[in-house]
Image 1 (cartoon, one colour):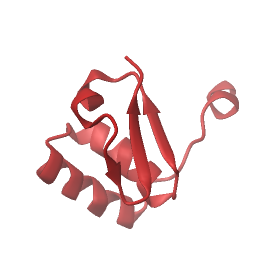
Image 2 (spheres, rainbow, N blue to C red):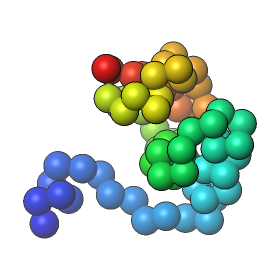
Image 3 (cartoon, rainbow, N blue to C red):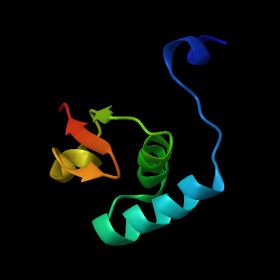
Amino acid sequence: MLLERVFKIHELARGAALTAARIRLERGVPEVDSLILATAVEAGYDTFYTFDVDFRRLNGETIGQTKIVYLG
């Protein structure tokens, strides 16, 4: 599938769902965006790059070991 060649696709795990809920409550990130970020955090990514404006105010912050970099 083309998407699998372009993106890394991770299944949603319980830990990521719980982390997403925490990110949503503590940081005010919309639900779907918090799930995407939480998946990167739980997978142990060092950096989360995004053009999504919902992450603009989190630019440079770190959650777990994952640094958020807004590219917009």
